[in-house]
Image (cartoon, rainbow, N blue to C red; front, side):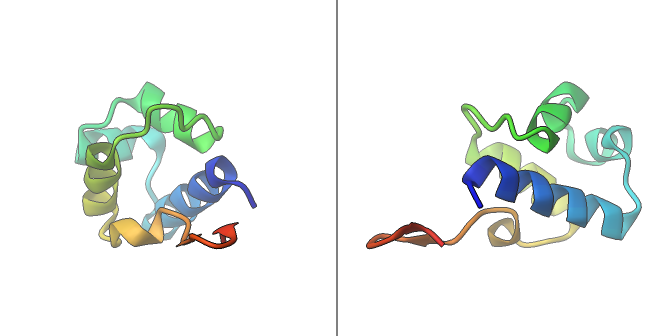
Length: 77
């Protein structure tokens, strides 16, 4: 699974677990709804750690839950 779809899937799962819509996540995190929509569609260009931190805080999940694990020898796991 590539990084964009991994992040999109994890974000969607965390939102579903909380019952959050994109709008609700925007209100809770301060991340613009358009950016959340982009992330859910797999558009993760220029994704900042600050954005991930805001989303993870709003969803009450660790940042590492929203990011793929990386193996230096093999690439993304």
